[in-house]
Image 1 (cartoon, helix red, strand yellow):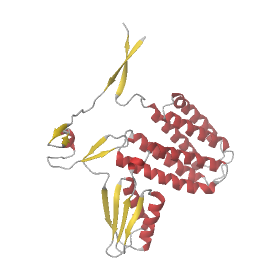
Image 2: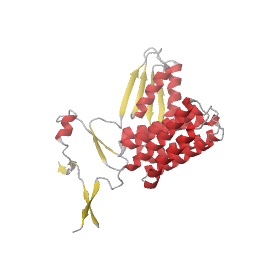
Image 3: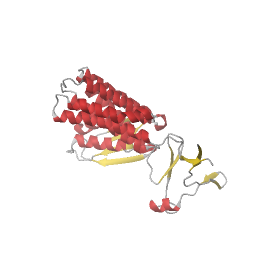
Length: 307
């Protein structure tokens, strides 16, 4: 017989004290300050994550502005990708400048990128020499779990569309996946939530899966119905596993093995087989995050034999 004793770990506990007539203050750890090159009078930034926790940072993420001076002959797609990268990294305001003038090809590429893949971003100013993009999103109103759930639903729909032969809709679904993916990554960079690694990896795996499904859409996979049904079940159970369902986690590897056997029996070329196996692997990796301890944050339990 065992008695379970639960301990709580307190990491870097600090106390708030009164400072002046109407302010409160807290001392930051010396090692943290030295590591980031902070000195007396250095600026630090305080923000709030989605759980209401105070986040102290040596650089300001929430209101970061970026600026780029462009050459009119710059590749429009490259500039659009630059905007997308800064969107994901949490920029709140982007200015594109050119003394020689911003060609329509560049502004059109940026407008298409913002409209298609950057939810919350709006072009708020545009002249011949300047283009301004600003963020109108309230991060407190965004639920990262719902974003991941929506992407998972879209991926499931992509698999269904391929199985029923409606390949024409896959491209539209993939665009929606990209849109939610970029919003999810942006949210992580700005709020730095708990389990950031888990969230970011799951987003990556889902986005990669959607890319693979889009590449498979034009193909005619003979006898692939069983494979696609297996993949749908695999993804369904992988998210049960992600939520901590131990039975689902335990069954995932066996399910993956069964799906791989079906894939190997398909009359498909090498690239198609690799894509299908990659999708099965992605589902398995998602489930593995459910192996994380489910105890309350910062708690662990030690079994002690009763005397």
